[in-house]
Amino acid sequence: MHQQLETAVKKGGRSAQLFRDLGASLEWLQQPRQAIDAYTKGLELAADDATLRVMRAWAKLSVGDADGAVKDFEYVAQKHPGLGYLRADSATFENLSRHYQAKLTQTNSFG
Image 1 (tube, rainbow, N blue to C red):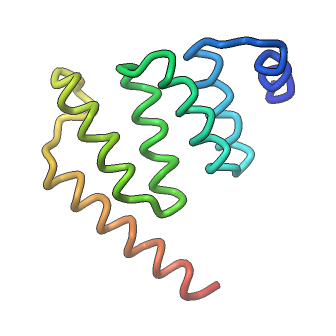
Image 2 (tube, rainbow, N blue to C red):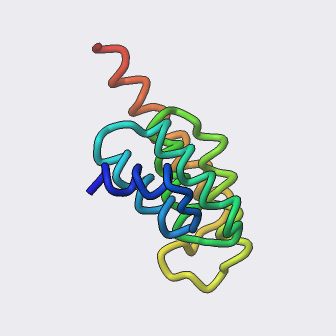
Image 3 (cartoon, rainbow, N blue to C red):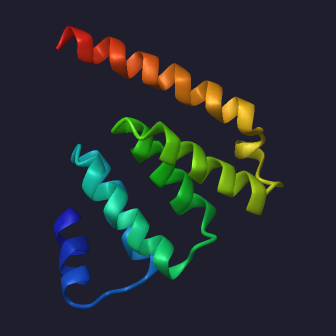
């Protein structure tokens, strides 16, 4: 599946859905930085796509970019306040960020 997505992009495919699927595939392959790039390309085509932005936020958290993740989460919360899975305020996102950073630091200190 991943190869098909890469081929579609190489052949000039340009849609938010294509880059969303490519990003998800890259995350599954444990390539979060490349996934972030794919999500960003999708957002260039559909800046207000809440799913793409949330997926990019989680990928950013996975590489330690808590500030970038919080910005994406806040953007979605402001643009799409009715989304049930994203009802939170800035303090909640900052707490999530701090918690994730602590876990990341803990994990890295043992490796």
